[in-house]
Length: 353
Image 1 (tube, rainbow, N blue to C red):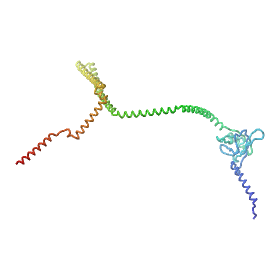
Image 2 (tube, rainbow, N blue to C red):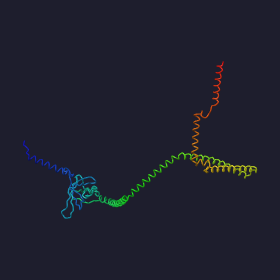
Image 3 (cartoon, rainbow, N blue to C red):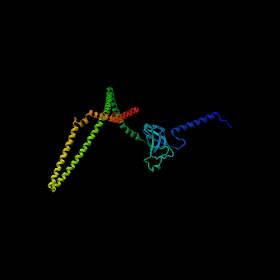
Image 4 (tube, one colour):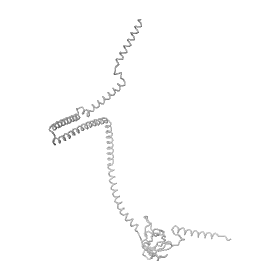
C-alpha cells in the first residue's frame, strides 16, 4: 500500500478549504450553489441604493437575489444589474423588474411585476441571460414623505409655540408671580379651615337652643293647623248657609229665612271671634315682651325654665328615695311614747304592791 505524502495531504486540505470558503460565501449571500439558477440583466438609470445581495420578490415571495450592479462603459452612466432567480420560477418576457423600498429604513429590493401579463405572455417566457425591462418605483417613499411633511410643519410650529410658552413661564418664574399665587392659595385654604372650625364650634354650642326653637316652631305649626281646621269648618258652615239661602230664594217661607239669617249672623260672629283670637295669639307670639315672645326669643328665660325643671326632677327623686326628710310620722311617734309611759306606770304599781 502506497503511503500518502505530506504534499498530497496539504493539497487536499487546500482544495477542501477552498470549497468550504466558496460554499460558505455563497450561503451567506443567500445563493444555493446546488440549485438551478436563471441569470437576468436589467438596465436602470438610477438604482436608488440597490446593492448586491438584495432580494428579488414576486408577489411578496423571495425568488432570487441581486448578484451585481455596475455602470455601463458607454458613457451614459446607466447601471447594469445582474440578478439570479430560481429556475423553477417562470418569468414572462414582458415582466418589469421594479426597484422599490423594502422598508422604511432604506433597504431596497426588486419586485418582479407581472400584474399586466396575460396567459399568452406566459407562453413566451424569458430565458436565462435575457435582459428584462426595469423601472424605479418610489411609491412607498413618496407616500411616506407626503404624510410626514405636513406633520413636520406642525411639529415645527408646535416647537415655536413651546419656545414662546417657555419664555413666558421663565419670565413668570423669574418675577415670583407663581410663588405669590401659591402663597395666596395657602392663605385662603387656612382661612377656610379656620372658618370651618368656628362654624363647627358654633353649631355644637347652639345645638340645644336650635333644637328647642325648632320644637317651638313645630308646636306653633300644630296650633296653626288646628286653627286652619276650625276655619275650614267655618267655611263649610258658610257653604251650607249659602245653599240654604239658595233654597230660600227658590220659595221658602219667611220664617225659615229669618232663622237662617240669625244662624248666619251667629256663624259670622263666631268666625270674627275666632279671627280675633287668632290675631291676638299671633300678636302675642310676635311681641318680644310677651310670654310666647319671651319663650321664643329670651334665652335666659329658657335657661331658667330648664334649670327649674332639673331642680324639680332632683327634688322628686330625693323625695322618693328619702321620704322621712319631708314627712313627719308624728302619730306613730306619739303612740310609741304613750306606750312607754304606760309600761313605766305598770312597773311602778307592781313595785308598790
